Image 1 (cartoon, rainbow, N blue to C red):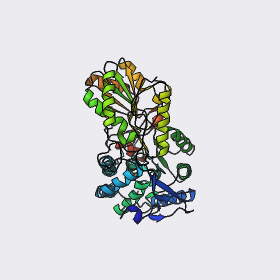
Image 2: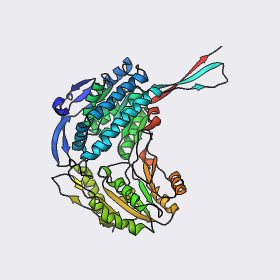
Image 3: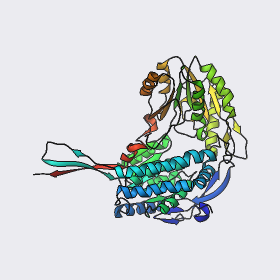
Length: 484
């Protein structure tokens, strides 16, 4: 029995499954076939208000924040265990919803989600304050306390992982949560609501409202009962989120768009570099804010690397995400596919060379696009400067280290970067100069819950993962006790 035979796409509020107040529902589409697979409740402002009120009541009553960190950690460990026990069903659900290859869903999304909750379960019992030495005749110390009700607003591309990167630390710190998943990909959020309940998370501590960003998302963002907003999405929407939250003086963590540069120097191990380059732009069909869609190559190896990519990229398996051999699945929605087509058309108009790909793949009515490599574009082209968010790689040559760094830092984004070199001094030197929240050397997308990530410039602020994430879901209180 699937989760939708048990609970057919209803809202999860205060520990109860319920339809939207007005009965509205919205369709969920399988991107590999373009067909409707189910419907889910479409929350309106009244539903969001109910969810926030449930989260506030649970917080004020201390049913979660009143537990010790060790007790909260035990429950989060149980969440991680349940994810692993239900891994096959969760992977199938995420693959159906997003179009992710089923093999990657299990190996990446489900595994990382379980690791997220496990990691923050361990951190839950390590929130320590500090004694402060002062000249006063007093005992001064600090306490870390939860913020209250957290609004977690997550995107379509990594529904399971990016929910865990917010809900995990929020719960570890003692907060309650209202989660609004992307309207296109709500299925794993609803599944996880059931697992939270089964793991022993008290009613009202985690609430899930499915619905559109302009309606449910906006209502959640503006609700006066929300104490913190954790958002992952586009830079344009992020600006709006920051503006609204700023009016209410709410703290915000924002992981926004990216357009990472991947630098390949002449001393790089080209065989390893090519593998990392391909992974960097085809992983999750390029719908990866920390992907590497801009390849910068030392001019001496530029023709060689282009030739290798022209031969290797078309051989990456693309097709039905249910096939275990598939590496590249469909785009998550037709609108994302059309956006990629528009950028490739612009590249052609500007005289670029399409090294490979450059067109849709007609398969089962799904939203497929062939992995595409583009050369001979000017650095000021929109195709290079803007975030395409699809399986498209632009390639540019550089003459020296200074030019490579300048090109890498030339876009408004700063989420991730990569360096391919066998020169250890160069690796450290270039990493220091790159404007990015995370820099990978001689690989791509090496991620772990212990390693913080986040952006600079237009890629946002705040950090997810690591102790830094947990700190973002707490407030510091100072206590000073007179000893006179």
